[in-house]
Image (tube, rainbow, N blue to C red; front, side):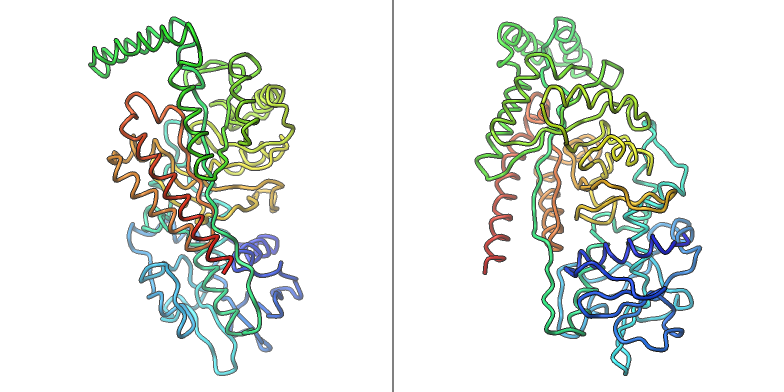
Length: 474
């Protein structure tokens, strides 16, 4: 993982933005300045005229070494040893160290202040930020699951036990506290805690044709072994044929809007425009009643976004064909969204989103486990390693998906609610954005026991946002 000058500048900028600093100005080959403080990214022993902060760069093979480490062997340091005296941050008792500066691998100190006043980080925050944000490991490793997704169990964060921590944001907040020791008169401008409720509309209507009803009834009887559910599906199908508004997926869609509005949120609904396939229900958003549902959300002040189909993550032509159908239906020239099945190839899929003129992507979460895939809960521009440049796109990392909790993790509804709120509090601790995915179909049928969980979580998240806003006003 030999960082280029562009990559180094990108990583430093991302750290400083999270620390509440102005954009850094490059003033030398390995030197930057922000908030009146000089930052060097070089071997501390080689910087003769340092006056601010030095970060020691790791060895070029440090990325590969991290990936090769046995699970659970990453070094940590007490959080108190990483902060200026008298400062506390809510990150837990110990801090993982992804990379040590080259030649300082056996150094006991994460950071220290020398007698000349210079602050030296012997842990390489810059390489760690780039490793996580660029998703370097997803290009370095060939591992893929049945849907050609990078599997969570192959990630360093999962293997080393820090997937549930926004490690880049934590590093940035530690850097901020050391900047404040050098400039006590400087006031950082950190972000504000936000919640984004998002909803992939894979199935806007369940009972659109007779064959779908028969298929659902067969699943109730053969897979779920429930004659009672089969009869209920028959009744639901009959009512929906007579009036689509009676379709339970439509009822759930409107319930989501009602819950968001009652709690001060605006939901983002990501609609599809794929043709039918094994993994795509396939519907045309330009047709009624899909068109009506889209504009109902727009009229109520919610966001409409794009949910590209299963066969788009590597095919720009398919992506743009579907996107254009949705734009025609919604009348919105620019939008964000998320890949279906979280199917993603770094950096290829990001390039497709950029080429198609999308505002943001929110696919960077794992299907099999909740947490911080990119090590952050702050929106950020992705980095194209192959072309050595940031992309003209924003990534809004996905933190929790409903199906992850129920289908993959096998949590109970109460366990799922607790996990959601635990991760939301971690986003709040670093003034980030908590992105939650909850499908409209996850309020009905076999998900009915989770419906109250979602209602309770939305209310609790609203309280968190209100409390954060009140604290900021003070």
